[in-house]
Length: 113
Image 1 (cartoon, rainbow, N blue to C red):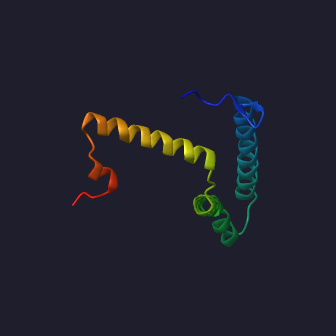
Image 2: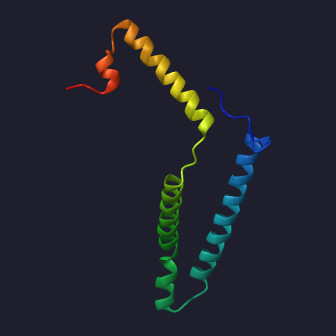
Image 3: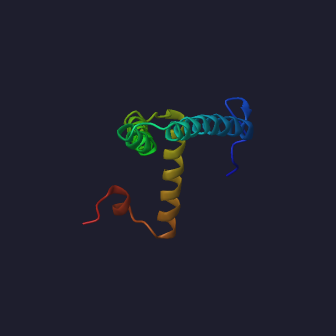
């Protein structure tokens, strides 16, 4: 299998670089604001809250990621053309295994008792 060379009509490497640059900019800006807040001489109660912001951000990102993965799995798109191609390949493989004596008709029908 060859890796994809295009992503939505654009070069795959350029697209990945753009996403990484965007992510790096967001993380860099967040860290700059966080360090500034720690250095600014906040009262102790606020300082303790500011120290926990990265942990809060990490947990929030984890929850968001789980929600996105769950949503994607719940609404998994089906492609009828690929499904029919896969079914043909499975049938071909089963016939080949049956011809070699690895599978029997009972195996193919699910009668394994």
